Image (cartoon, rainbow, N blue to C red; front, side, top):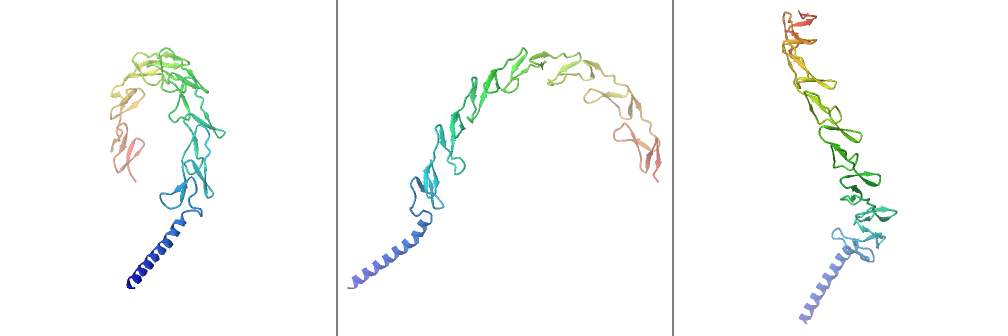
Length: 260
């Protein structure tokens, strides 16, 4: 008799645990699912509860419908915007994926959504035309513009490369748009020639060698360097080519007078 009561008590306790568990779990399950559970072509989310459509399907109401992808397209996996895109080498046109027309002597870019001309060809409208390189010229790495440049010592004139006429005491530069040459140090350009710079007494060639400057204590007067005449109570200024008054004197004309 005692054994039967004990068994009944254990059964009641187990039944109570099962009832409690079902009450606790049921709301948590129902919270993230629709009334009918997970719909077809969907799966439970890996976190946060609820469900999501499988790849290739999109949510509509409480279900998942198949994404209609045109030929030569693929599903992007995005959750917003257009859910598909065109394969490499195809472009979107009228909601279809149309093969890109790549002209002769061209190739698809790495992204696959446009084309570029081969080396030695340049784009002209929707075609690639051969670059005509003149004598004393060479191909460049761009398919735009002329597609060629002139060798060193030549400059572009129309569709030709013309030799740069460098005068005596001059040298070539990389400036292909200007004269293309400069004068040596100690010479200056006069027309199409390089003439020697006449440095006066008490003068010297400037840093760039294209002009001259006076020594400290001298100032330029025409083509000469004249000595600076210091009035009483004056000294050379920071340039060395003019003078200033010592304090407390101030400059007035060619004199230094006491400050009032």
